[in-house]
Length: 434
Image (tube, rainbow, N blue to C red; front, side, top):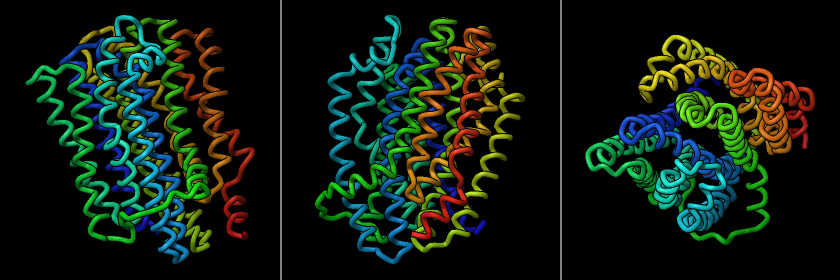
């Protein structure tokens, strides 16, 4: 079981880490090559880009869970049909989002709360980012399906290749060619195109069960995978809401310096979040496969291993934040006020990831066993109910320190509440008895 865990979880975690790393390098290049205002502008646009990742995750996990379950139940024909329908629907959706993003860029940036000083930079970044929505979404989804099709290393390699391409082009576009903030968006899009190009031969040449082909979109199947995958979208939407609420609170209590600081924190914490998400995303095919085979012992075993792994990784992150925090923050800014504010925030925020990891594991497990209701409850609690209350209460009581501790309290309350209303073992026994 542990061997299987490492085969799937480790490449997925590495792929997600690399993916988040080039987001961090984007931040370094933007901060050093364009300025702190550009860094804040990218943070303003972050909720939109996170929502796109959430949409891709919905397709990846919802479709992937059905594919792996049917493979586990020896129904490969059904698994193939699911893949083809999901991919066709994704293609339609991604084209629509790209068009909307390019045409209504200014309205979207205004809605996200950009100040007058940051609006033009935010519009420039988002417009070029939206041009590449199609490869951005397809790259994430195909990586997940390759993993569900038994080739987790290929998913890792394609993501790494895309990341390296992005990093090289970031430097060329921003420093050598002087493209400014749009250079970072273009580099990200071209990097995803490289990822897609590496993944395509797997499906075109029939290297696994899943191949491209004609498929008639069935409303019931779309509804089924969407319901299973929706918590993944909701989780990322929740993160977008979390960023948006923090942005509003920081503008009120601190001003633009607070946004710049929070932008740096997001760049640093994105790494740990994506590693934790990568682990649970990597284990999802194993849980779904064993769900199809009605092997509850393995399902629960994989969940336990995932929880232990995420706790250990979160502990390492806390230590790194305290010991190396100032040096890491210094990569993004030379402003001493922003640097000190960011370090104070990082030390407090790092503890929330113990609970973030456990909440993510629980969320994806319930998706894998097709019980998404509890996953949705978790998302609602952490972003719509507990966090706004915590930001108002602790922000009023402790100022900016209260803003930083709100996430930890919110995640803790979410974990406790979900534990009280649902039980992993009981839920697993219930779905296997059907």
